[in-house]
Image (tube, rainbow, N blue to C red):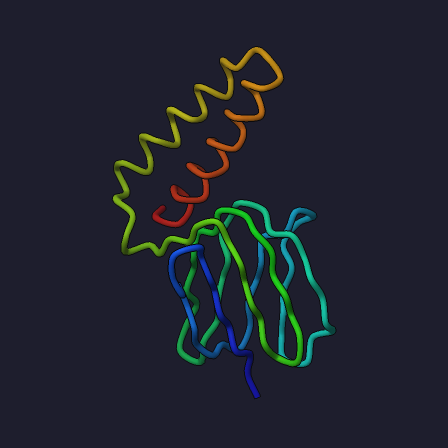
Length: 130
């Protein structure tokens, strides 16, 4: 038995396949899901979701959202999702370094929050390609 994984963004179905196991980036840390997992709804942080199919592991950058696990079906609703193939590694590295610098320079509370979100997005994309 396997999990049916569906990753939805506002504009498309990003992933709709079966998997043996997933690891989600939740707001409280990583959460693994196997078949027959207890039903749960969880908030997702910006980060990497790992998906294990019968062949191998696939990683996807998620830009925050929610996940519903119920009866071996996992529905992931996210603001955005990206695969490794769609990201230019040198651009991702440059964006990560710039976001890190902006986070260190941020002064006000609003500026720090915005810089932190930009840093998390850039870090997720960079981790995916490195």
